[in-house]
Image (cartoon, rainbow, N blue to C red; front, side, top):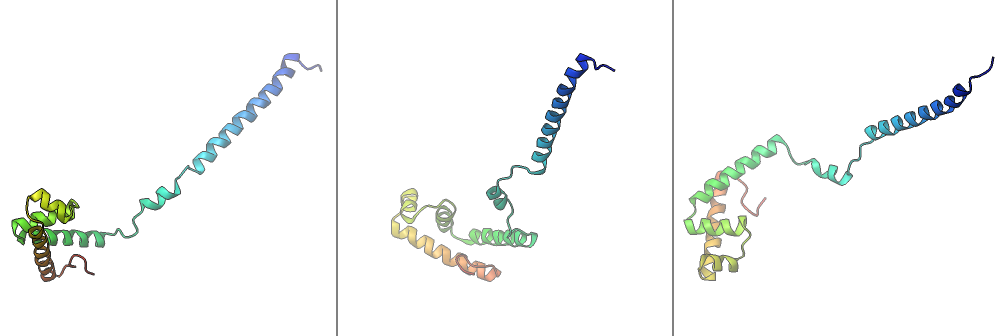
Length: 130
């Protein structure tokens, strides 16, 4: 039996097509199995200290701080808020509030003392303490 010349020429092309197809599928499967993950990003995603108990404790501390801040004089509250929540220095506070530097330092010191006493009464950890 004689082989058809057209059939003889198409056999290698079919074979090559099958090889290319199979290699392409292997590459696609390999990329699905091994996703491109940034190890540094992955390490930073999970917060080991996060837990429901810790979050509840943080919320309770925040409520205590908010309540104790409410007990401060208006000037002490404003000075402490600007210093700690906005990062202003004593000199920047004095310029911003148009007050003498000594007055600003006194407001911060007395306000922090009152805040600490209030937090200690509440049983919360005082700022700067364990």
